[in-house]
Every structure is written in C-alpha cells, then in structure tokens.
Amino acid sequence: MKYNFDEILNRENTASVKYDLRLEIFENKEVIPMWVADMDFKTPDFIISAIKERLNHEVFGYSFRPKSYYESIVKWLKRRHNWDIKVDWISFSPGVVPALNMAIKAYTKPGDKIIIQPPVYFPFFSAIQNNNRELVENPLKLKGKRYCVDFNDLEEKLKDSKMIILSNPHNPGGSVWTKDELKKIGNLCIKNNVLIMSDEI
Image 1 (cartoon, one colour):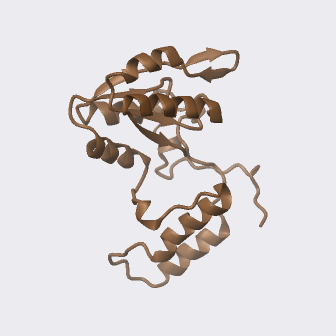
Image 2: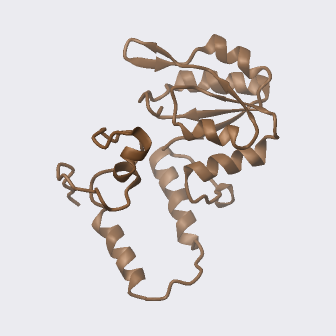
Image 3: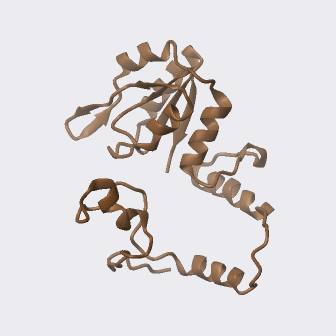
C-alpha cells in the first residue's frame, strides 16, 4: 500500500481545530500548528472504504463495539510487543482527554496529589485541576537536546502523591523514555504505592 506523505492538503475552513482555531487560541492565524496530534496526510483508502460502506446503509442507530474490535487490539499487542493481554483488560474511551478525566476520577479522590512532568501536553493540567486534585510538577531537565527526568525531585514528590501521568513518547519534548528510565520510574512508584497512568499516543 503506497501513501503520499508529501502531498500538501489545505485543511482551512473545514472546522479543523488544528488550523481553524489558530487565531482564537494563539491570536495568530499564521502560527505553524504543531501543538496537536493531528496528521496532515490523507486517511488510508481501506478506512475510507469501510466508512463509505457503513454510510451506504443509511441508518445510523446505536451501535456497539464488536468482538473483532477487541480482538484486533489483542492481536496487535501480541504481534508488535509480544504481550498477551486479555480482552477484559480493555476499556473503551472516546479519546485521550476523556480517558484522563475518567481515570483520575476512578483512581484518585478530590485533594489527592497527581504528578506531571512539564513541559507536557496541556490537557494533563486541566484534567487534574478540573477534577479538584492537587497538581504537582516534576519539571523535566533539558540536557543537551533531550529532556530528562529529575529523579531526585520525583522521588521526593512521590512520597505523598497518588498518581503520576507519564507522556511517552514525550509530548512536546519528543523523548522516548528508555527501558532503564521506565524501570526506575516504575520502581519508585511501587516503593511509594503510586499509580502510573501513561499516555502513549
């Protein structure tokens, strides 16, 4: 299957958050919109075909996620990461931001401390604050061209926190945390009984 990732598509005036809200968000319509995970290449043909096939039915009643939806996730994780998961481990969410809010409500209580590592995806801040949890920052340190975890600061802040929200690969810094870094974060969280929520988009 061939894709043309060099084709430039004009997405203005399509109700695109990425392009059509630049003036409202940044007060500058010319800003390069690299602030949101929204790709600028065409959707693959097989996805367009599946949507068209569904549209041709012409009835849009309530639907459910079929067994194949969950099986595709299980198979992909096995094929890609050699990780055997069970279907009942999977919870559906309509998006990352709703999932953040639901997990915060499910696993913490109002007033609980939740750690994030700025600079980081801005909805992390609002998901914590809008749910009446206490925002705790463990700022990343820029070493050369890579953001790194300040483990001394993290270890101190984990002592009275309930959750840490990771961004991996890191948004916006671009770091992919190494196995050693993830193990160190994991071991510190186990030691302090802190839940890890990881956004891995």
